[in-house]
Length: 162
Image (spheres, rainbow, N blue to C red):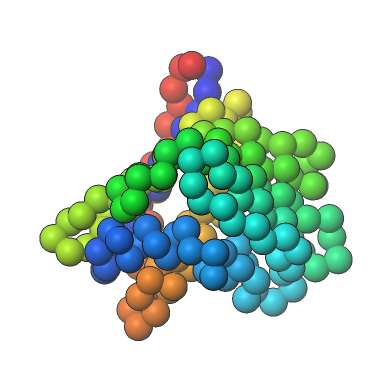
Protein backbone atom coordinates (compact mmCIF):
# COMPACT_ATOMS: atom_id res chain seq x y z
CA UNK A 1 0.00 0.00 0.00
CA UNK A 2 1.18 3.51 -0.73
CA UNK A 3 -0.22 6.88 0.23
CA UNK A 4 -0.90 10.00 -1.78
CA UNK A 5 -0.92 13.69 -0.96
CA UNK A 6 -2.95 16.05 -3.15
CA UNK A 7 -3.08 19.82 -2.80
CA UNK A 8 -4.91 22.31 -4.97
CA UNK A 9 -4.48 26.06 -5.04
CA UNK A 10 -6.05 28.71 -7.27
CA UNK A 11 -3.71 31.53 -8.31
CA UNK A 12 -4.87 34.87 -9.65
CA UNK A 13 -2.40 34.72 -12.55
CA UNK A 14 -2.11 32.83 -15.84
CA UNK A 15 -0.40 29.40 -15.94
CA UNK A 16 2.75 30.81 -17.58
CA UNK A 17 3.30 33.18 -14.65
CA UNK A 18 2.71 30.52 -11.99
CA UNK A 19 4.81 27.89 -13.77
CA UNK A 20 7.67 30.35 -14.30
CA UNK A 21 7.58 31.50 -10.68
CA UNK A 22 7.66 27.86 -9.52
CA UNK A 23 10.77 26.99 -11.54
CA UNK A 24 12.67 30.30 -11.61
CA UNK A 25 16.07 29.88 -9.89
CA UNK A 26 15.75 33.44 -8.54
CA UNK A 27 12.66 32.42 -6.50
CA UNK A 28 13.98 29.21 -4.96
CA UNK A 29 15.60 30.75 -1.90
CA UNK A 30 12.33 32.45 -0.94
CA UNK A 31 10.23 29.37 -1.79
CA UNK A 32 12.46 27.25 0.44
CA UNK A 33 12.17 29.54 3.45
CA UNK A 34 15.20 31.82 3.32
CA UNK A 35 13.12 34.75 4.62
CA UNK A 36 11.95 32.83 7.71
CA UNK A 37 13.76 33.97 10.85
CA UNK A 38 15.91 31.19 12.29
CA UNK A 39 15.87 29.23 9.01
CA UNK A 40 18.87 28.66 6.75
CA UNK A 41 19.01 27.67 3.10
CA UNK A 42 22.54 26.28 2.77
CA UNK A 43 22.25 24.78 -0.71
CA UNK A 44 20.24 26.17 -3.62
CA UNK A 45 20.84 24.48 -6.99
CA UNK A 46 18.13 24.66 -9.66
CA UNK A 47 18.23 22.76 -12.97
CA UNK A 48 14.70 22.46 -14.35
CA UNK A 49 14.94 20.44 -17.56
CA UNK A 50 14.26 16.81 -18.43
CA UNK A 51 17.03 14.93 -16.64
CA UNK A 52 17.94 18.01 -14.58
CA UNK A 53 18.41 17.86 -10.83
CA UNK A 54 17.54 20.56 -8.32
CA UNK A 55 18.85 20.34 -4.74
CA UNK A 56 17.89 22.46 -1.73
CA UNK A 57 19.32 22.01 1.78
CA UNK A 58 17.38 23.87 4.45
CA UNK A 59 16.48 23.88 8.09
CA UNK A 60 16.71 25.50 11.48
CA UNK A 61 19.89 27.53 11.77
CA UNK A 62 22.56 25.56 13.62
CA UNK A 63 20.85 22.19 13.06
CA UNK A 64 21.67 19.62 10.38
CA UNK A 65 19.68 20.55 7.25
CA UNK A 66 17.02 18.57 5.43
CA UNK A 67 17.90 18.07 1.77
CA UNK A 68 15.29 18.05 -0.99
CA UNK A 69 16.26 16.61 -4.39
CA UNK A 70 14.11 16.82 -7.52
CA UNK A 71 15.02 14.89 -10.69
CA UNK A 72 12.81 16.05 -13.57
CA UNK A 73 11.29 13.59 -16.06
CA UNK A 74 8.68 15.96 -17.58
CA UNK A 75 8.99 19.72 -18.05
CA UNK A 76 6.02 20.86 -20.15
CA UNK A 77 5.79 24.64 -19.75
CA UNK A 78 3.28 25.92 -18.68
CA UNK A 79 1.21 22.78 -18.13
CA UNK A 80 3.02 20.14 -16.13
CA UNK A 81 6.09 19.13 -14.14
CA UNK A 82 6.90 15.57 -13.09
CA UNK A 83 9.87 14.70 -10.92
CA UNK A 84 11.26 12.11 -8.57
CA UNK A 85 11.28 13.73 -5.15
CA UNK A 86 13.60 12.77 -2.34
CA UNK A 87 13.58 14.46 1.04
CA UNK A 88 16.45 13.48 3.31
CA UNK A 89 15.14 14.48 6.72
CA UNK A 90 18.03 14.94 9.14
CA UNK A 91 15.92 14.52 12.27
CA UNK A 92 14.55 11.19 11.01
CA UNK A 93 17.91 9.92 9.78
CA UNK A 94 16.37 8.75 6.51
CA UNK A 95 15.02 9.90 3.18
CA UNK A 96 11.44 9.79 1.90
CA UNK A 97 11.29 8.90 -1.81
CA UNK A 98 8.17 9.88 -3.77
CA UNK A 99 7.05 11.06 -7.19
CA UNK A 100 5.54 14.50 -7.75
CA UNK A 101 3.24 15.67 -10.54
CA UNK A 102 2.29 19.34 -10.67
CA UNK A 103 -0.23 20.64 -13.18
CA UNK A 104 -0.99 24.27 -14.03
CA UNK A 105 -4.51 24.50 -15.50
CA UNK A 106 -5.90 27.67 -17.07
CA UNK A 107 -9.18 28.71 -15.47
CA UNK A 108 -10.28 31.89 -17.28
CA UNK A 109 -6.92 33.62 -16.84
CA UNK A 110 -6.31 32.16 -13.40
CA UNK A 111 -4.38 28.99 -12.62
CA UNK A 112 -5.48 25.91 -10.77
CA UNK A 113 -2.26 24.34 -9.51
CA UNK A 114 -2.66 20.69 -8.53
CA UNK A 115 0.19 18.98 -6.72
CA UNK A 116 0.04 15.19 -6.39
CA UNK A 117 2.78 13.44 -4.45
CA UNK A 118 2.62 9.64 -4.60
CA UNK A 119 4.51 6.73 -3.14
CA UNK A 120 4.52 7.49 0.58
CA UNK A 121 5.13 4.25 2.45
CA UNK A 122 3.25 5.38 5.57
CA UNK A 123 0.37 7.66 6.42
CA UNK A 124 2.60 9.37 9.00
CA UNK A 125 5.14 10.35 6.35
CA UNK A 126 2.39 11.67 4.08
CA UNK A 127 0.83 13.62 6.93
CA UNK A 128 4.18 15.19 7.86
CA UNK A 129 4.50 16.51 4.29
CA UNK A 130 1.00 18.01 4.60
CA UNK A 131 2.47 20.57 6.99
CA UNK A 132 5.23 21.92 4.72
CA UNK A 133 3.68 22.07 1.25
CA UNK A 134 0.83 24.49 2.13
CA UNK A 135 3.41 26.98 3.43
CA UNK A 136 5.46 26.51 0.24
CA UNK A 137 2.36 27.18 -1.91
CA UNK A 138 1.47 30.26 0.13
CA UNK A 139 4.97 31.58 -0.46
CA UNK A 140 4.55 30.85 -4.18
CA UNK A 141 1.28 32.82 -4.12
CA UNK A 142 3.11 35.78 -2.59
CA UNK A 143 5.81 35.54 -5.26
CA UNK A 144 3.21 35.40 -8.07
CA UNK A 145 0.76 37.98 -6.67
CA UNK A 146 2.31 39.88 -3.76
CA UNK A 147 -0.52 42.43 -3.69
CA UNK A 148 -3.24 39.84 -2.91
CA UNK A 149 -4.25 38.76 0.60
CA UNK A 150 -3.69 35.11 1.63
CA UNK A 151 -5.89 32.33 0.38
CA UNK A 152 -6.87 28.90 1.64
CA UNK A 153 -5.54 25.59 0.39
CA UNK A 154 -7.74 22.74 -0.52
CA UNK A 155 -6.04 19.72 0.99
CA UNK A 156 -6.91 16.18 0.13
CA UNK A 157 -5.11 13.07 1.24
CA UNK A 158 -5.86 9.50 0.37
CA UNK A 159 -4.16 6.17 0.24
CA UNK A 160 -3.90 4.00 -2.80
CA UNK A 161 -2.68 0.47 -3.12
CA UNK A 162 0.45 0.12 -5.15
